[in-house]
Structure formats: C-alpha cells, structure tokens
Image: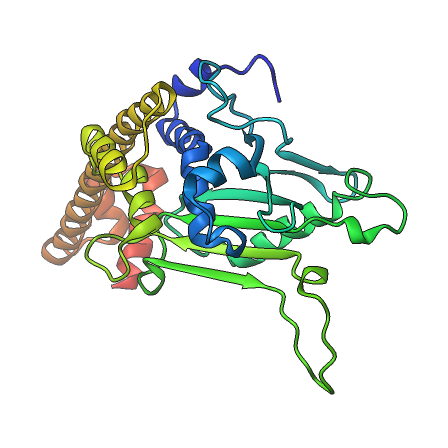
Length: 325
C-alpha cells in the first residue's frame, strides 16, 4: 500500500464515481456489516449471533484495496491481510476487501474476499462467477509458502469470494446464490470428509429493490446502505432501528461521504444525458435540413451540407445516417 495515499486524497478525487466506490468499500469493511453478510451467506456462521461473528470470529482488521482505513476508531474496520496477490507469471490481483475469519466449530481460519461490483452490466465481457472462481483459486494457490510448505496440503484453508452486485439483471434481483464443490458418487458410495474438498465457494448477492420479492434481511440492509436515493438520515434510521447497527463516527462519516458523492455522480449523469439529448436533437435537425434541401432544391448531399456549413469532419457521419434510412 502506498503510504502517501490518504483518505482525504481519496475523497477529494475529481472522479466522484471512483470516490463513491472507495467509500462503499470502506463502509462494507466495517465488522458490523461484514458480520451480517457472513451470517446470511456462509454456512459456518448461520447459527452464530451477529455480535459473536463481529467480536470473536473476524480475525484482525480487514484490508480495503489500496484505500487506507480511518485511524480514529478502536479496531472497527479492517487491515492486516494484504489485498494484493502477486504472481510472477499471473500478474497482480487486487481484492476489494480481504480478511480472515475463524470457523466457530473447528477453530480453523477461513480466507474471505468481499468484492463490490457496481457496474450496470452484470456481464462485463465475462461471467462474474468465473472471476470469483479465479479469485478463489489465487487465494488457494497463494497459501503455499504462507500457510504450508512442501506437501502439507492438509493445511489448506477454505476461501470465499463474495460478490455484491448493485445493478444485476431483473431475473437476479434480490437473490443470493452460492457456488461450491460437492461430492458426486459415479460408481459406489465412497465418502470423503467434507472438509477435505469443500475449500472454495463463490457467493453472489444481487440487490434489487422494495418492489421485488425477497426484499428483506441482508439484501434490504445492503440496498439501503448503498442506495443513491435513500437520504443519509433515513439510512442511519433504518440501520439502527431495523438492524441494530450502532453507527460509529467513522461509519457515519463514510455514509455521509457516500451520500454526497452519489449526488455528484447522479448530477454528472444527468448533465451528460442532457448534453447527449441536445447533441442528438441537433444532429436530427441538421439531417432533416439536409434532406429538405436535397428534395426542394434538387441538390446533391454534398451541396446541401456545404450550404448548411457542415464541417468536413462530420460529413461522413451524415452520409452514413442517410444510407441507413
């Protein structure tokens, strides 16, 4: 991590989208939030009280990509496990949030990655599940030399890759899906202890909205927390009253940053939309004028564009538009 990077630099970035993304990751790295995600999604913690997960089972402090964690809270957020996974042949992978947790039953350590996928496109040129499998595989292979050496594969730790998808397709809204290894008996019924092969899982948390089914529990909590529309005061009220989440100074600060930056993102999107609409309207007006001159004056396309003083650099685009009609 670059020690010169400060929270202030992150928050005063000229890119509101990047700043909002970073603020989201810092809020999600709060142990009180991670504990609720773990209880809802990971079998190992389903029977544990949230407070126990938060206070007993999340080890150390989760690391948030390359953005520093607020220093003024007493261990409420996470750092310690490097978010960069380097390989000479496979390059460097930077995880959004990375930490370890203790399994309640066995006392074994589990490696977890929480990824925030804020893209509108659920399929950004590849399936996110495959990326999750790749991340898990890298976390498995990177244990060599850290968790074990030689042939001591019995020391391999289980890993999870959890994806929070803020804008999934309609058919995935308000769903939680887990992908993991299972035993299949092809011939006979030989049984292997589950802990020997259940070493990686990918969990997809796809948010939706109050109009859809299953809008409850951790799905509603995350939707409220990451919403562009919900006000800061309303977020605080819902998190405290409905989910018993006590807002620390750090968390209140990050939620405030998120709300302010989300307004900037929305304002920029609106402005771009207006500019695009004006540009498209102008383009349609010029195209209509070209067609009218060609029809009424009997001019060629080039003559009409010359009369309208259409720049040379833009003329080919109008030729293409007319050919499509």
